[in-house]
Length: 122
Image (cartoon, rainbow, N blue to C red; front, top):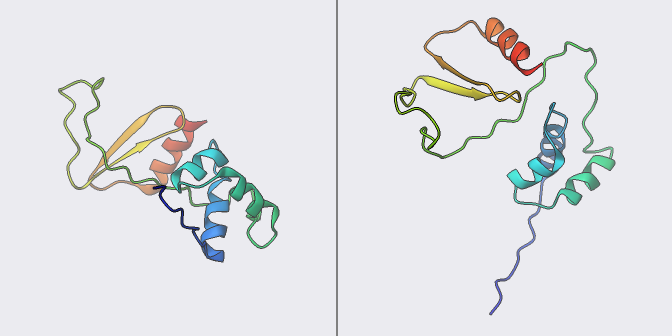
């Protein structure tokens, strides 16, 4: 017996959000499609539709939100040094496109963090 497929119905807001995620630097449509377990061709179809296509930022330095992926995985990869402890509950880790991993604990200056991430990603 074959498993029956169910057609996922996406709201207009979900379509806009998914299309917007494809505009982040270094993010491919295929990767966004994989995140939502969907076919990339559907996203390309939505991108051609003016109702869902993301608008270009008004100014070059305009703030934008980047997609965030929460991954349920152990903090220790096999190739990491054992002395590298898992982060505390008040710690965040950021993996940049350049392959750097930032670990931030406690209070931090958001503007300085943005400058650092831009410097590492560029």
